[in-house]
Image (cartoon, rainbow, N blue to C red):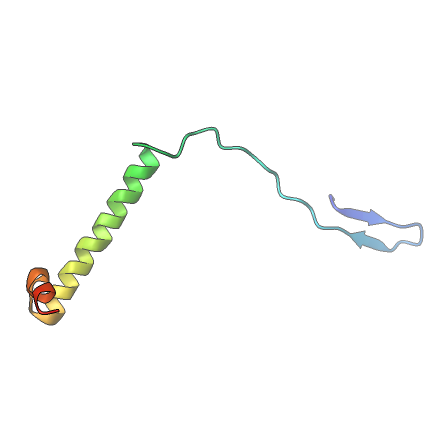
Length: 68
């Protein structure tokens, strides 16, 4: 077992084990698959939010913004 040291009298000292570190070599900027998935998910959330807003207020988004 990692992180455990047993002394001569049988007592154990249990130490924290550091997590394994790694470096992600894939670029996370530009038109990557990750960026496209995130953009699509945020667009879906925005579209559903707009539909709920219109269903609850019985007004469109443009008319709500004009009344502000």
